[in-house]
Length: 433
Ligand code: FHN
Image 1 (spheres, rainbow, N blue to C red):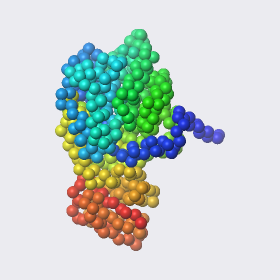
Image 2: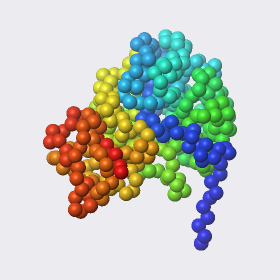
Image 3: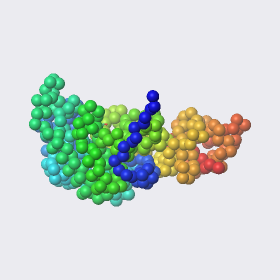
Image 4: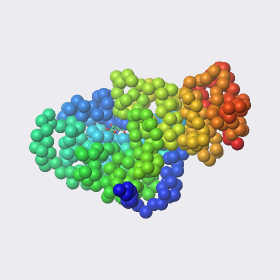
């Protein structure tokens, strides 16, 4: 039977070349900061605490009444992001709890109505732009506070008895919610200057997304592009039937085994990851990744042609806690001398075979290959099949030459210092013939 591939429908008449131009900075920059901040930072037991613990609106109200991020200084956040080597950042303007960090005309459930009395997003955008980072907005399509949003199987007010859903949803009008959602996205795309990324979250098949046209996604994305022509949009509006329904895939919280594809074609992707398993500040969380694990996440993502969006969950008072600051500092120390193996890099050409216990990245513009040594070898390290292909090799951390010689097996043998260089993961830069 002839396999007929669906002709990918397109929403916009943007050419592939125009799309690559629009995404060029994002593909080059590779490394961004995700920020999950909201009322959930107060209970500090995960950003899903309201759903996980079935907390009612009235029981959750105390967090709104007492919310006061008195130590919030987004310029300090931006400085830490920049020092960590991050080139862009995405912040939750509203998460599933429905609380808005921005001064929306369409709700009273917002930071400007708390003791903060500030548009936290306006200050954030100004601060991150001032530090030279690109700015992105996360916006939750899900809203557990809005009276018209459907009560579903993850809603904090979900019933124990499935038979009660209809009764609970009586009077809830998703058409009104769609209007609210559109109005807020319009505010975000209109009131804060040029926005570089929109990170919507999330559709789940069978419940929320195109099945019930919950977000009116097609009309929404057309409005977004009209207001912000150069913006980059993730893939969570559930417009997967369109080739241009999202600019990048968003695998999260697990190792990305290989470059994601769509209809057999590789697509842009960014994995988002947490330090500790929780996106929101979680005081008692213990499973924090160490610096080496976080660096491997970054290097491995780039080695497979992707980006890393690494998340910080600030405290309710507006600080990155000590653990987060420690991890960001560790990333920054490594990036300061090894960033060249990340920025502008991608998957190594097929001809370069990856030796065990290493990760390769490649800069197609400078034609330099980077070997990341995950377990530092004793003195000698061989690159299979690389005989005669490299004209110079150096350790990136200190720019010191790495002597090399061809082997009679057709490989390239690198002579490494016995003492491991003073970086978490040493990187050898190979300047190719
Ligand atoms: O439910 C959210 C979760 O809280 C977090 O925001 C992540 C980030 O990608 N997105 C959803 C889970 O996929």
